[in-house]
Length: 179
Image (cartoon, rainbow, N blue to C red):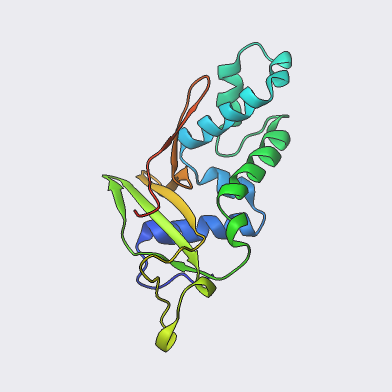
């Protein structure tokens, strides 16, 4: 994977996050997601695995404990295994281990939110050594929604979706393929 020198910080952070997933470092990838995304993913996991509530009194407390940047809970192993698998399905699995490049350099979604779209370079035409995404061309991609916060850029959304905590959490498509 190549991080171009001119890549804006949000896209560079997306490259770093994909590198963490590819390296099998889900704990660090988890820590670099926004608290909102971590909580919503945790709640999705709890809703899909209601038997975990047999051992706790309060699902909100359980979700909050598991959604920490570095959870220290007996259920973390199960949550991380299942959640990593689901995240990979919508991010890195479609592109495998192919070399990625930028689809565009700056894609604001709203203040503090940017779309980072990374595409396999081998799917693009490369006249004169420069990768070009042709009009109407369809390619696989890793699409992440990045959010600016006090610790820099973090992953706020996966694929084309933002997640909102709740029981059940909601998933809203906010990015279209042409964005």
